[in-house]
Amino acid sequence: MRGDRALRLHLLLLIWLAATDKNPHCSAARDDPKAIELMDAINDGYQLRLTNWNKAIMNDTHSNLKLERILWSSKPPRFQFTIFTQLTVNRLPTLFNMCTTYTGPMSAAIFLSLVQQPVPYRLQEDQSFNSEEPSLALERLSAPNMVLVDEAVQQVQDFHDKVESNPDICQLDVMLFYELYDSEQARLLYPVNYLRNYARLQVRTRLLAMIDVDMYVSRTLSEEMAQEGRVAHYENLCADRRATILPAFEPTRPGSKGRMMAMKLSKVSKSQLESMHGRNKEAIQFKLRVFPRGHTPTNYVRWFSEAQTYKVSYKRFYEPWFITCDEIMPWYDVNFRGYGMNKIVLIASLNYYNYTFWVHPDAWLVHSPHLDTDVRKLVAREASDVNKHNAKLPPNALYRKLTLLFGKAKRGMMRGTYDPRVDPRMMAVYDKVSWLRSPPKLVGTPTAESVFI
Ligand SMILES: *[C@@H]1O[C@H](CO)[C@@H](O)[C@H](O)[C@H]1NC(C)=O
Ligand SMILES: *[C@@H]1O[C@H](CO)[C@@H](O)[C@H](O)[C@H]1NC(C)=O
Image (tube, rainbow, N blue to C red; front, side, top):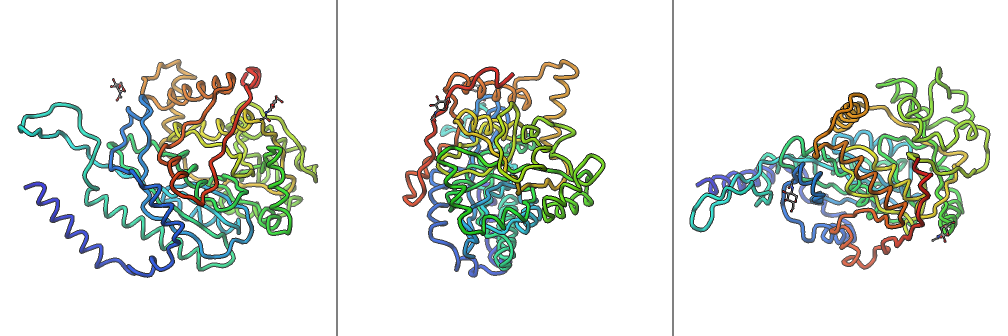
């Protein structure tokens, strides 16, 4: 009986969706065959299954991403350098702003999280009650979740249309993923590094940079990349494993005033930026007040006085954004989910893979301020419980997991055995799609222990 009702509801919903779909055919017309091939390869082997907090944290079960839609830009790329990023559907306005400050190719992995109840029990053949834990496998999305997926597809489609219709902004390729969770808590496990890796897989140029979606890109970077020979110049640096660092700033004011200031700071010249830089002025080093180690190695005092690229050394917890090539770009370790350490470990791995760090003298990023996410608040609360109150966290606490993962990565780099964890479904895509560039094959050199102290 229950099954029949569910099926009827499902059919009704399908009819409703078909009736309310504004333009059911126009989107299909410009689907890129390569994009569709990539989507099919990514979804190959996908099974509807719920992600559970304890299993993800304590047993390292993988996130289970479904690629619902892929849309590629048909605008010609302004130059052969791509910024890739990830975001949740509600951050589309932020992506739009970023896409106005940077006018070249972009690849974005957009994410929708859904919560669904686990199947409470399974009736066995003999109808006896099976008291095992609830099953995480599912037959179908619930009706409300189907509506949420459809709404997200429509939003992303409309967004992409808007970006496509504007010749002056970025050329945007997007993937829309969703993941199903069995609880509101599990929903906090935002698969940040899975999404970064998928967005990178989608990049169609050799030169690339991962830049988080809340960063505005200085106008000078797009202007430079559009000049003859500049992309080739950066590609040549890849033979020497030189990462080009983009210094990051933030407005001194929060909220909407800060966001307006951030936009302005991305458009001024370097000398104007210098006159606006300082604790009592408009802009300071990103996270200077809360986490100076993240960017201090960039050496902001020197940066303002340099007209040339200069070399800096790696320091523990350095987390700059940088430009490199696909063939030497390491994977983001997917075990870092939710919030914390996810970029720090990647930069430590650059050091492990013999990269050197060089600061771009005339391009920069500006953080656009926003409210903290719930998972960031959770990690901050747990960190303060441990560090200020000596609390012992339970084995399924996210902050505890972060410290374990960081310790493991650090030991791997010291021993020369570091290997970031990746999504096996994503790696399998390389065997299925013939035109993809091969995945990177990187060999590290043991990191001296002193680097981590
Ligand atoms: C993790 O795996 C072990 C061994 O398979 C199992 O005994 C344990 O219950 C699992 N833990 C969780 C939280 O699922
Ligand atoms: C990395 O650097 C170390 C130390 O300078 C050197 O011994 C090693 O050969 C380098 N490895 C690669 C792959 O370049």
